[in-house]
Amino acid sequence: MLKFLIPIVCAYILFKLLSGDKKKKEVRIHKEKQKMAEEGLMVKDPICGTYVSTDTDIRVKEGEKVHRFCSYECRDKFLKQIEDGKE
Image 1 (cartoon, rainbow, N blue to C red):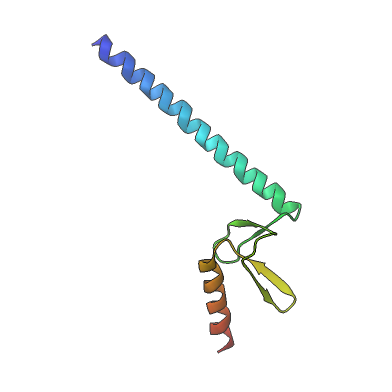
Image 2: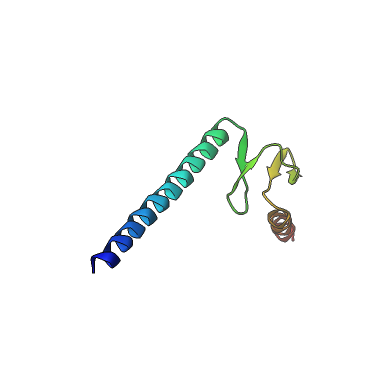
């Protein structure tokens, strides 16, 4: 019985350690992105909310404002919203 219990307990502890590291990494990355956004190095995609570098090539100029996007899909959704709003 002990032969089975020890590996199960070790596997559980290892799982908890690895999953805890993943959560810490996600929190750290989120904080880094927020800091970069505060410094003006990143902006929020208006469609999906992802933080995007201000150097991205996927952007749309609307009047004086420049919107930046994480993907062409988000850009196309934004353009469709603008077209629907003008009708």
